[in-house]
Length: 108
Image (cartoon, rainbow, N blue to C red; front, side):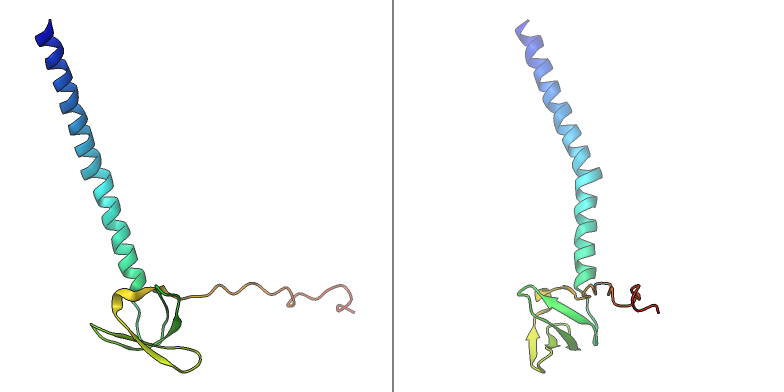
């Protein structure tokens, strides 16, 4: 009886390892690759686009090379950053203005 119970526990362990391996290769690994590709795509900026760094600086890209990206702030200061310091392209959300619609008093 002892030999049979040891054999069943090792087969259950093997089944768990196989299930975890399948989960990793078919779900977790492709998901992390997709997320990494999306992050890399969001960090790619071209000259003329607005970008935000990981430190929070926002500026317009004036020069982009393989080892440096130059951002110009609104004050006119140009700062050099390594490409990995670019967090994302910066597209601020502009709230919809309520002044475009006439009120009842303005309609007359």
